[in-house]
Length: 140
Image (cartoon, rainbow, N blue to C red; front, side, top):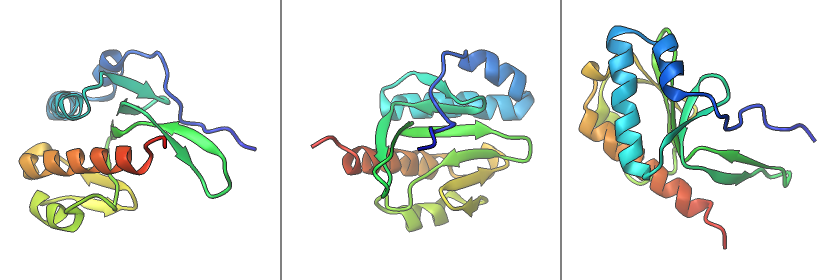
C-alpha cells in the first residue's frame, strides 16, 4: 500500500514563507497563518515541502488506508495562494459567493490576493471547514 507523500515535517514555517513569498503574497501568507491559528488553536506546521497546515486528523479512505492531514491549510504558490477547503462545510456555497474573486478546483480555493476577497467571509468558511472536518473525522 502506498504511503502518503504529504506528511507533517519539522521544517520551519517562517523560513519556508520567507523563501516562497515576497511583498503582498508574504503579507497574505502571514495573515492566513494568524487566521488559521486563531480558528484551529494550533501552531502552523509544514506538511510536505510547500503546505502550511494547522492541527491534524486521520483521514480513512474507502480502501481502509489512513493518512494524517491538516485540519486547515494553505500553500503560497506563484500564480495564487491555495486555501484547502471542504465542500461539505456548513454554508459552503453561500460563503464562496460572498468571498468574491476566487477560483475553485476540487478542494482548492485559488486566491490571487487577499485584497481581492472578503476576508471575513473567507475566515468564516475556513472556520466552518475546520469544524466540519473535525466533526466528520472525530474518533468514536
